[in-house]
Image: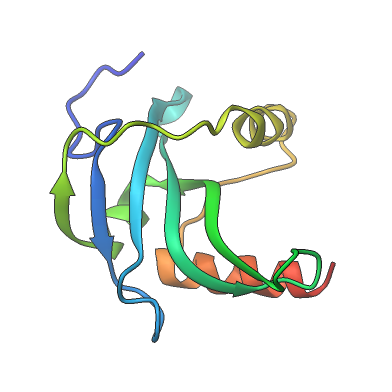
Amino acid sequence: MINKEYQFKEGQVWEYETRIGEESSKLTILKVEEYPRGQVVVHIAIDNVNIKSPTSEDSIVTSIEHLPFDLEALEKSVTKKITDNQPIPDFKDGYEVWKLFFDEGDAGVFSTSVKEAVAYTEETMEQE
């Protein structure tokens, strides 16, 4: 239950400070959640990225279905809102896995820039 008004709302699409070569990438707001002690988590999906992945069919992943972000970190990353009413892609599976680990204290949220989170995601995929 959201008690405050936040600039991020489900279905919004934003431009953000991207990595070089991914300037057309955008992020979509999937969900905004408040947790005890005032933590606000904004769940996003990202499209038009070029992440090297040895386990994907083309060795490249072009989207990230779910990343949880600290509100302030996301606010510092976005540059321009594109739309307010993008259909929300299905992120249930990734969210449920994250939530299970988060509730057990074994997962967190990104407090870095979106650009750094995309780079981290690529590093993680390269190690698989």
